[in-house]
Image (cartoon, rainbow, N blue to C red; front, side, top):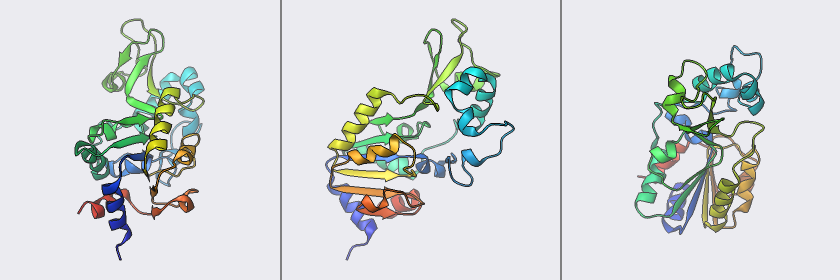
Amino acid sequence: MENKYQTLKKIIEEAKQIVVFTGAGISVPSGIPDFRSAEGIYNQKTKFKVSPEEIISHSFFKRYPESFYEFYKQKMCYPKAEPNVAHRYFGNLEKKGKNVIVVTQNIDGLHQKGGSKKVYELHGTIHQNFCTKCGRLYDLDSILKAPSIPYCDQCGGIIKPNVVLYEESLDQNVISLAINAIMTSDVMIVIGTSLKVYPAAGFIRYFKGQHLVLINKEATPFDSMCNLVFNEDVVKVIEKINL
């Protein structure tokens, strides 16, 4: 009788289209903290008198851009982070011809760095930034090198990261592409997410395929819906199926 790692390996090998739905947990082995664990960003002490959730809100960015950027650069940007074995595994699957689509809640860009080409970023990315006045685009270095608030060198407007802050809506085009990928895939692998943050968590309900797999250290509200559940580190799971 095959174990569940062998079962997952077989599911992936036989899949026609795989959608990989990822949260912060997949990037923790790359040195990027998650949000809600004991060591997560939301539980870290800061010098600010408001919560991290409030700091990364649209209204806080508008009212206190200097404080926003001080927190953002320290806690949200990890330019030296490298993709781990999980990111690279799915990137390599795509390179080998497997139809793999990544839908991620992460803003770190590690899926693309790990070789994935078809990536839908629900919450945007730290690697794209734009002037709030004229729309000119800037890369991450432009943000990190600014002494405080990054200003547009063309018009002087404040530059904003192309990430979805609290109080902002997700991009409707990205949502449509993500939902279509989920609905048309026969395998969905959910990795490193508590599935408690909506609307992203609700996307799993669009899956109508054959195999729903969940890899997350902690149990989630959707575990009972899944064919396979791994309550362990994603790197360990990938290493076992990639032998």
